[in-house]
Image (cartoon, rainbow, N blue to C red; front, top):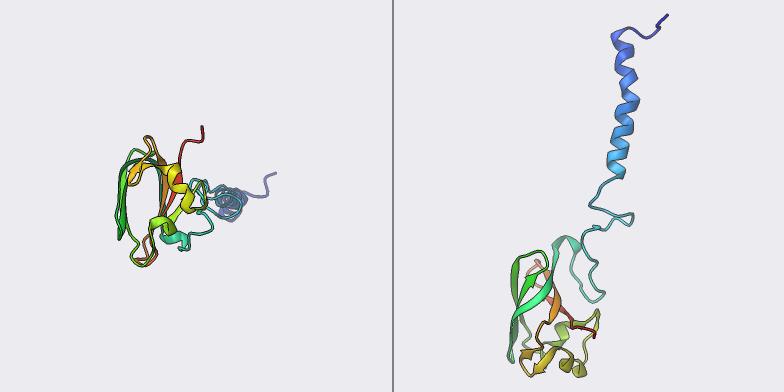
Length: 149
């Protein structure tokens, strides 16, 4: 004898399945890892002081570069097959190196030879990750990634 043939009973037989489905979907969000960070986005280096919601990064080969006493311009052909560019104004600083990292570590004056063949000319095949904040105040940070060979 079936004790659950009424419409009321049939509705509640599906409730556990719906709840289980909702819980599994909420726990299996592919955009986040267990720490709540976006799994497909790299974590910014410690020196980047921008809200994650306003931060983007581009990683790839540097295809354009120029620097002078007031600014640096960089163009990246990204690993995601886009071309991105930004200009960093460094007026008030000795040079642009205050906005640089080298493999995630603070950039030192002696590191220029690791990224430039001659002053103002990058080593061929130079790679970098550029961290750009959309808040309008925080300057971009370039994390240089020269070949380690």
